[in-house]
Image 1 (cartoon, rainbow, N blue to C red):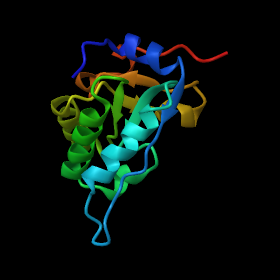
Image 2 (spheres, rainbow, N blue to C red; image 1 turned 120 degrees about the horizontal axis):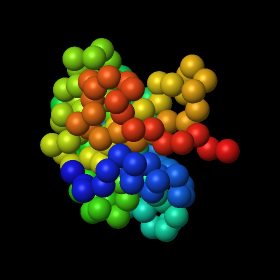
Image 3 (cartoon, rainbow, N blue to C red; image 1 turned 90 degrees about the vertical axis):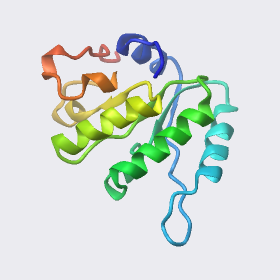
Image 4 (cartoon, rainbow, N blue to C red; image 1 turned 30 degrees about the horizontal axis):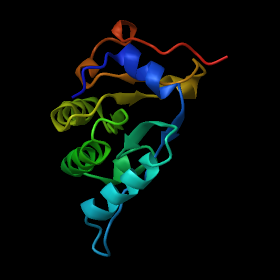
Length: 147
């Protein structure tokens, strides 16, 4: 886990391009860590990348088990080597999402996506610390809406 606060992470994310790499699988639908890490490294070669959303940014969080999300998150953290914040997927019901958030913290992710309010018209998503999972919505820091 980085030493960035949720507010610092959100500021970094707002400063450039966000990346949502597709999770790599083999023909038996097993996660392929090597190709995934190579792809993340290639994305980072574009200098303006300010955040990598893993295991969920393209919707695959609902096709992965919590352990698979943990594996993908660990791979993303290893691939980025601290060069950009890693935002880990979390979803399903509350109990599973909290488990995923705790695993994201163990894996070294910098935050979780907080995009639910985008669907109800409250502005843009923000980055949350995995430790914020399960806290009352009003207690969580927010990134100001973009102009």
